[in-house]
Every structure is written in structure tokens, then in C-alpha cells.
Length: 378
Image 1 (tube, helix red, strand yellow):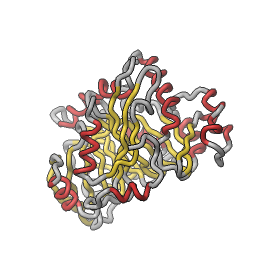
Image 2 (cartoon, helix red, strand yellow; image 1 turned 30 degrees about the vertical axis):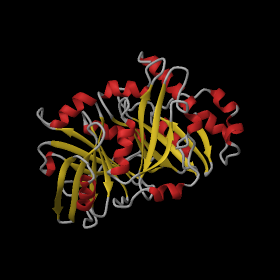
Image 3 (cartoon, one colour; image 1 turned 180 degrees about the vertical axis):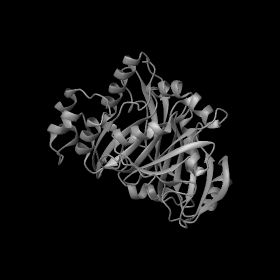
Image 4 (cartoon, one colour; image 1 turned 90 degrees about the vertical axis):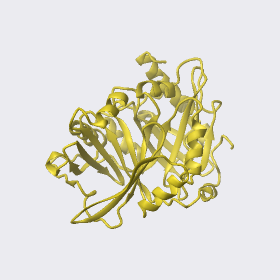
């Protein structure tokens, strides 16, 4: 496939098979060492709001979970309550990170049957949970590393989040940052594993390949990687899959795999309608972003053409710009949100563009390499 962004997104989406219709991302669950403190961080730094809680007070003796929401984004932060919990094992091995990517479907049982019949490994069989607000059906399949896709059917539920949780009322709900929905989620996999997981999403989940990049597209003088982007039929779910490529020094993908101890979710891209306001709020809240040198902006408009935004704030905040045949996009990447250099967030605003910032790869990966050099891991 061409290494440039596609020009007919509707055609690409139509190549995906619709045996697994997905309405969107239901939630993303992170296993963390201290859910209460992590919830405070995501509220304070990223502007999430309190939504729901589960723990000892709701009858769960095994784990505590805090649910946060902003726009259509739901984060679930989960911590084990005893030393024998398998969640402990996950945190010990990987550190804080994404465990479950939950997908909102109309029929969880059918989604489970369709995917397992095509070769998906079972994470857990479909089961029903209920309370006075109705019922939710859940089922899970395994994907790369220890990541699980959970099918969530909630058409017969009208409670706050799901059974087993209660509304979490808090006096502290800071201003949101203008984050709207999850644009895409990126998975890092090991050497020569990218095509294995591309084929998994194609065969097992009916996704189509939206775009691909090789080591000629995504490389610097020192490091390289390869990536393919998979999308479902309606384009609401996009999963880029990265693998390392040979370079003179250790790539960011290798660094991730070393510190995460295997494959996993590298970053979550969250969309905004006003990236300047969003980034200003996040920076004021203490979120740290990768540094983009001022020289990046000397010729950026020669490459991307005219844009609606004032260049002054974009240069001041280090926001990257790229264009494809559909329009342009604005993007910026946080530093890792935990001590291990693993999970980070991307802030993205699309002005028609359907691509992923190919023109920014060199500047982005040089910025990441500067951080790797500071960490002594390059």
C-alpha cells in the first residue's frame, strides 16, 4: 500500500467487513498502583470529571475503580486491594498502563461469537451484570501483549456507568480541557509482529488498513519504526500498530517494549475542537509536552499551505501541523504520564485531514530522541 495518506477515506472504510459493527470506544481501563491518586491527577492535569466509583463501599473486595469522563472519553482507573490479585502482577510487570480497551457494541454475545469463530483467543465468556437501572452484557477477547478488547452492550441500561458502580459525587471537578473523544489508540508490538496483528484486526475483527508507513517514512539519523493503521467500517475506531525497525540506536518502540516488558498501548490520541485553548489549559495544569524547536516553524507553511489558525500561538505552544488530500491537522504529544517511559497522550485537532501527521514524523521522533537521551536510553 502507498506510504502516503489515503485520498478516499469512505472507500477505505467500506473495505472493512461489517460483521462486527462498533459504535465507538466505551471506555479505556488502566491498571494503576494507586487509583485514588491517579484519578486526582487526571482530573487536575487533564480536566476529567468524576463519574462513578466501585470498591469496598460497593461490595467489591478485590479492587477499586474510579471512572472519569470528559466529552465522550471515559477512563477507568483500577487498583487491586490484595497482594494476590492478578492486577498486582500486571502492575509489577508493566507499571501503570492500559489493560482493557472497551468497545461499545449493540450485541456483545454476537461480537464475541463473530471474533472467536475467526480465531480470537477468549479473555472471558459473555456474562450479564444488572441492578435496578437495567443490565450490561460484557465479553472479552485477547489482543497484543496482555491487552484485552471488551465488548460492552449497554442498550438495556440507564444507570451512571454500569452495575457494581455508584455515582461518584465530588466537590472537586476542575474545568475541562476541551477534550471530545478518542481519535485513535496506538499499540506497540515486538520485532516482526506488526503484520501478525494487522492480520488479526483484518481477519478477526473485519478492519481495513487505512494507511501504512515504513522505516523510510518514520526515521531519523538514529532510529526508525514501521506502522500500519487499522480502522473499522464506520471509521470510529482506529488502531495504528507500530513495530521497531533497524537503526543506529534504540528506537522509542524498543524503549517502550523494554520498560513495559512487552507489547501494549503506547498512546491515546484525544480530539479537541480548539487545540490552542486545550494545550494552554493542559500546560497551566502541569501537563508536560515534547519540545519542538522554533526552527520547525521557519518553513512549515511552505509545506502545509495556508491554515486558519494564527501561527503565533502554534509556535509558542509547539503545536505541529500537517496536511493531506482531505485537509490539515494540528497535533502535540505529551511526555510519558508515568515514571516508566511508556504511555503518553496525543492532543489532535482535525481540519478535514484523515491522516496521522506523516510530515511531522521527523520533528516528532527527534523530540522523542532528545527525551531518550536525557533518560540515557537512546
